Length: 419
Image 1 (cartoon, helix red, strand yellow):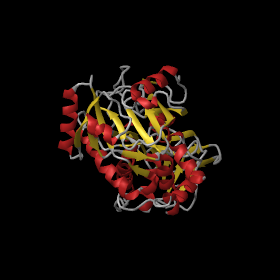
Image 2 (cartoon, rainbow, N blue to C red):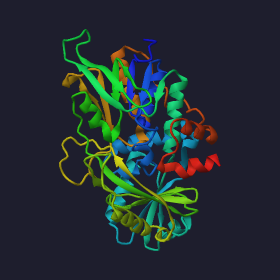
Image 3 (cartoon, rainbow, N blue to C red):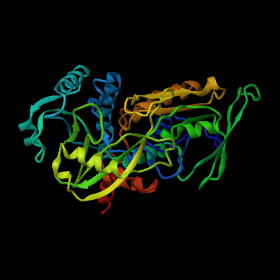
Image 4 (tube, rainbow, N blue to C red):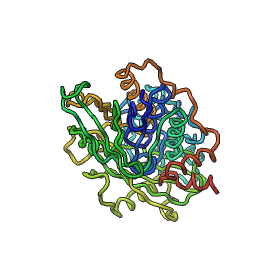
């Protein structure tokens, strides 16, 4: 492997959870990696989410394999991520007007997958969550939690650097050069990547991994290939509210304003789902904020008049090459690894879709494929190797500062830890 910093074995484009996770996984296997992110780390979807650590219950009846992936990764992150996550538990609540058959289907699906549940009546739910609406008829407990993505991504990047990776922030990809099949010894593919910003250099990687989420089409397009993203925007509203224990999920078909995520002294309310064509240029509508607050208040009435702390929108990196319809809630939250070899670019991969909870598995699957191509015979270590600083919030927040600062999802937590 080359010692030339402009000649990495693998260039990972995208500094969200998946990109940082891939960089960490590959470097732990001894692969020379450079990570390039156009802004600060976790500045895209990862750090603009509601920060739910999924138990899998949210997808149990609609996507059992995806729910099982969430459950497994939930358990792994609790073991390796320390103060990057918070164990809160979760509650799926059915209001008086919600379909009881859907509740039964959800509960049964969770039990079949192996998600630990506990069914409780409305009074028991209100005893567990003071302030819960009188209209809550019944509920069941699940092992949901909270992810602090700024910490999680920064810790992955720090570990990658500790094992030899180069991490570039403020390093947008400006151009990707490709050679046509048969015109070079490698049979074509990416031949050079021009990186701007603070780097301002041309890199010559052996392999490129496009881990840019909702922006994957843009990067793939620079290499003359297609992905097929179908991004949608969603609003998150953080309000002052102290004392909420578990994550609250409305037990009904997915809709606007059906989740409340607890932070210390705040709760995050979300979210909406509106298709967008450009993940950098989209409308942010007041009705989304109003609807999210109104719907979440049906579960937890006190949030209706709670002071608003901050509001942000995120863009889901949904993969839907065949999805022409306007409603994108039905698109799978599973992930896909695309090998662009069939399009004449055999050294380019795109990893798309997925969820923040499953970032590590996405990284492992991608690293497995890249290592197979490289002839690297080394197994994944990220499921058992703790992240650096996992038990030291101050160290984690120092990592966050190193890579660009906190993002909206956990700005209150990271900032509070520094004070």
